[in-house]
Image (tube, rainbow, N blue to C red):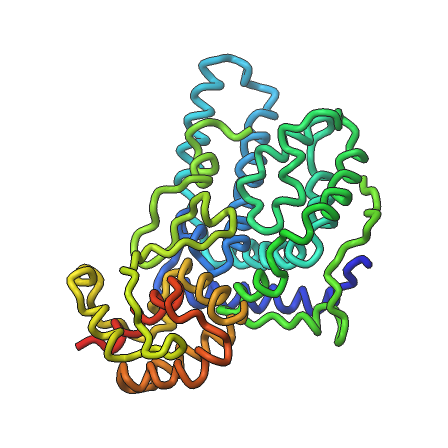
Length: 371
């Protein structure tokens, strides 16, 4: 069945989310840059939809310049100068709060739509493409599609659809039926919004309505220059500080830990974590470069760690992860934290205690209480 949404809830949620994000970011800053936007929230799709809208505005500015009847924009010297100017402009993104907030609001709304009803979302995207240039449109915009992109990515560089938009729209619906079982969990995608404001799917769809599947037969609905910021964001430079790298592994939804842990037992009986063994292991030579007391764990996790722990250790429940981190922060000592983790999470959530996610999680807990 087609997703039936509560548009009032979506509107209010998106607005409140945008307000909270902007209040947090602009506490001590007047402007936000393009690189800041890429890491603005815990939701990579929200961030990239903001960048996507800026790209569209950038293109609109270029079109306005070229529309002047008084200058020859076909001249090669003018073309080269304009290209250089627009590229420089794209690398000088500088947005005040009053202009960013509506961009965030729109991006959140779009992210929720692509998570819950990807067929309808991507059909609407195709309807924006210039006549006869759907393939070019998809190729240009694919870097901004981070959620459920399998629904539409198969169309890029494919032949046989010609210029018939109806064929593209039907193909999206048909392809969804093929790939839907391999798509990321809707709840896991929406959980990434929870760091700012918890999303209530009951209110969004109506209490008891939890079918996110689009219609099996969808309804038919009617190039940036080289060197620009928008060209470079697909493989951006590594983000400094405790932020996430945007790379191929992340786009493929495979969260890769950056901590390589030696394969030794950290349990006492195979099912319970052993505080003494953990201390001895993490105090070893291998961890000298990683030592250092952390503050609150909820503030210390890198984004890739947050995704990994949510997915691998806390059943995709971001709220449960936050509760666990808060409880561990309040434990008072490493031994008490290990006892708490054993009693509340190891058995209840079926943790594989010698797995990489558990080791990396416990390494952070060790650092929290390291002397």
